[in-house]
Image (cartoon, rainbow, N blue to C red; front, side, top):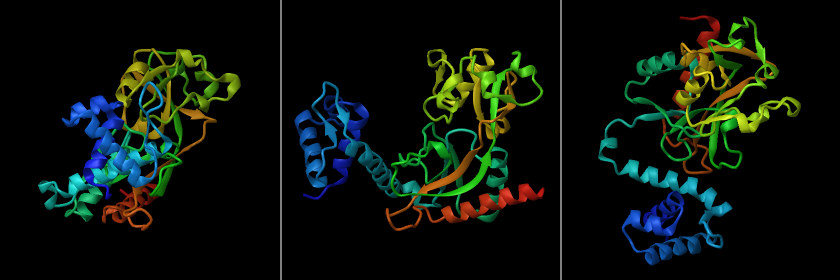
Amino acid sequence: MTAELRHLRAFLAIADAGSVTSAAAMLRMSQPALSRTLRQLEIHLGARLVDRSTHHLELTTEGRRFRDKAATAVAAVDEALDPARLRPWPLRLGHSWSAFGRHTTPLLRRWKETSPETPLELMRVDERTAGLLSGKVDVALVRAPSIPRDAEGLLGEWLCDEPRVAAVPADSELAAHTGPLNLAALAHHPIALNTVSGLTTLDLWPAPIRPDPDAAVLVANTDDWLGAIAAGDAVGVSTSATAEMHPHPGVVYRPLAGAGDVPLMLIWRESPVGSGRPGHPAVPQLVRVALEVLAEDAQGTP
């Protein structure tokens, strides 16, 4: 049997819905037919993708790995068959927060000047890899610790290191400090953690001063993270790019000493996997432009 696009769509529907019954209803097909389609795909791959031995359906290790590949393949086919894409092929640049910091606008302007034939679409996607592994973007700005270690077929370019900053309520005692703060100064406060696309975890703090996990304020995006801090419910840790891109009247940013810098990278998927070539032909040009913008900023060039 040759696996077809319908097999990938069926598997992704099951993975997203969390059950064969719900996925069958979404696809408007019978449960037995969907189960047979899944089994055909597993036979073709020679691996079990879904664990049916537990009360709740779960993906196996192989299933989790295959999910990213299947999503990328389906997204590529959908894009190729989209009539709107027959005109200029946009380069979709993803980010989950703060984009390229203060360099974002210079990058967009420079791209428009040098590559007017290829629209550059900046897209915020609240995922660890800013939509890259799910096929929503062609290239992504990602803070390095967010890159999955087991992700296959990824290429990348280091751009710069961003210093960490503390984000504290504007009316708090911490905001009154004019110098850098440190992790110990934040440890006695609830920590706002973006669990969907954020960089910071409580593991940033050494064990002896690690904040109480039960007191952490969990949020799903940067907007809610800022809201929790501004309301006085928590403090947070991010990078200088957040301070540059997200000024807030209720939040004060302070340098954070002793927490280490965070690498910012451009990452993209090679196509086909193993070829060493990016999926979108304009990716190498974007890398060059990004590095040029950084170099000019370092030299003070307007």
